[in-house]
Amino acid sequence: MTLLPVADAQARVLALAAPVPPCEVPLADALGRYAAAPVVARRTQPARDLSAMDGYALRFADLPGPWRVIGESAAGRPHDGAVGAGEAVRIFTGAAMPPGTDTVLVQEEARRDGATLHLDGEGPPHRARNVRVRGLDFAQGDVLVPAGERFTAARLAVAATAGVDRVAVARPVRVAIAATGDELAEPGAAGPDDLPESNRLLLRALLAETGAAIVDLGILPDRMDALTAAFAGVEADVLVTTGGASVGDHDLVRPALEAAGVALDFWRIALRPGKPMLAGRRAVRPGGGMTVVGLPGNPVSAFVTALLFVRPLVAHLSGARDPFLHTATALLGEDLPANGPRTDYLRGAVIDGRVRVAAIQDSSMLMTLARSTCLVVRAPHAPAARAGDSAEILMIA
Ligand SMILES: Nc1nc2c(c(=O)[nH]1)N[C@H]1C(S)=C(S)[C@@H](COP(=O)(O)OP(=O)(O)OC[C@H]3O[C@@H](n4cnc5c(N)ncnc54)[C@H](O)[C@@H]3O)O[C@H]1N2
Ligand code: MOO
Image (tube, rainbow, N blue to C red; front, side, top):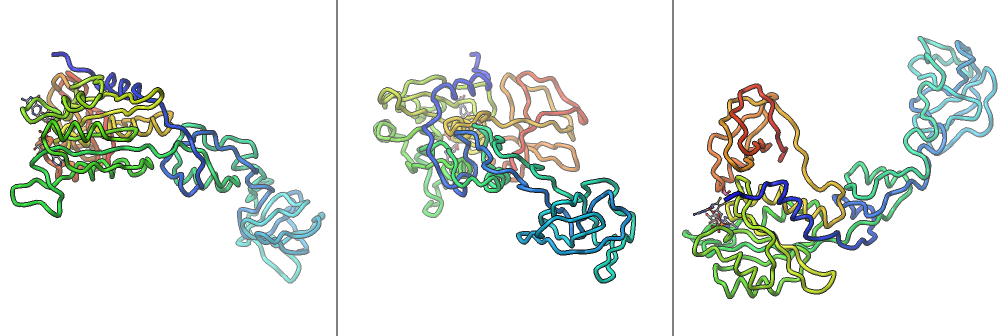
């Protein structure tokens, strides 16, 4: 059986749905979300020439002085009036350059003798030294955050500096999450033979920064009627299930989704871990509908498929221009064998600039995931690699 390549599966998942409509939010609520419209500067920054240092504002042409100090300019309290030849103004970081001045002499290279100022050092080497000229950072009308880019801490600060207090972002994407499996119980209530359920928390944590609104469907049993009823009743943009996606007698998620009206787009992909993943869509009304992603139950498989498919899908629905993670390169710290037919994501860590992978890669082992800082990506049929070769990695911590 030829399995669907990962990149094709990723493209098909995104093609299942279009971004949700935008809304306006205060800047403080936009972290991690995507600009639905470009953020445009309402002001120029800095609005006028400012000093970058504590010292004296003067004319470069007057060097090497001496000067007569005629006043002071502090941040928020500028000096009144123009400054003439041979004159200087005491100035502080962030204060407006008085008209007529063009350069700042730092106080470490100056000596005051009453109102007289002397050069005491090399002095500024060129005009405009220690001056932040008007518009150095950005100008009114500049696009500060293009549509589709994510609001990071730095971008929020830039928007605030530009006088913007509300921005357009997609409304929160509603993501319903269900774990399936008769062996599962809530962590605090698990008996000796139960397995504490962890995939819902894993998914919730991976989606936390996207601003998604989580609809928790809890733990569903391995029963057709219960699964079908739960899936048919979901109101969300995305339904994510974990477990029951494989071929065992109790793997009922796929038939239950179909019974609940979900049209499957694909099932099983060329990915390790994560082969039994599925995706589909339930159309409820024109323009509406729900995208469904069924993840394997093994916790590491759920993590990898969530990283490669679920988070990018939620980012896409939230208006992201480029929703996928990008790989970096690192040098291998050890030899790796040739890969099989599936793209392999190996848990590893970059130590002293070299990436090392965990010896056992069983997809049930959460501790190896918790210890890892990256996944080493091995293409299908990649030949054996040697220590020192470069490898593609995805940073995960
Ligand atoms: N004969 C075959 N058997 C299996 C195949 C196959 O192709 N042929 N594929 C294997 C692969 S690969 C995977 S991955 C697993 C995935 O199977 P399911 O998606 O049906 O997952 P489950 O059987 O429900 O669970 C697998 C494993 O993970 C534990 N689990 C499930 N959900 C959770 C949860 N929410 N929190 C914590 N742990 C969970 C579950 O107890 C099982 O141990 O199938 C292989 N089999
Ligand atoms: O592909 Mo399964 O997801 O290895 O363990």
